[in-house]
Image 1 (cartoon, helix red, strand yellow):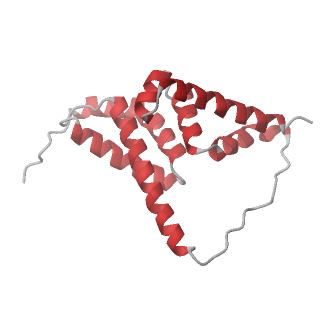
Image 2 (cartoon, helix red, strand yellow; image 1 turned 90 degrees about the vertical axis):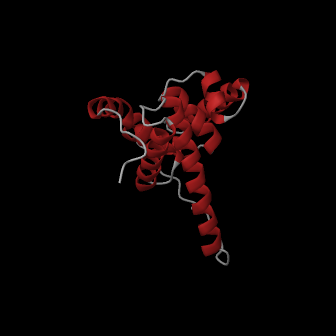
Length: 168
């Protein structure tokens, strides 16, 4: 039984994967709800991207777009399942507000990033971690460039507010 897609030369593929895998995983992790979901999304996205690129090394933008789409699909699936499971349960939000010490700034910031609305968090991580331009972010997210710029600014403002809570 022949494989329909020839695999790229192993050393070339491995070098490409080694140089991008961590950043792809961080992106997937920011778009999903758990590390295991991020791993699943990343694996599916890499396989799909490789297949779409005809067995060649895929374009980084294609991989990022595929990760994003796969994460959205997974999130919707989880949301549907949760709504079914909790259809009769009352939702209560936690009222606990942590008292952060100065050494917890990084943890506080990581939590604040996770709590950003998806549309703001996505632009923030693409700009900071992927070093993408706002036109490229807009294209990837399917939004106008000025919207990408505004979302980045709003994300930074919210993070700044979270950090001011840490001041004594």
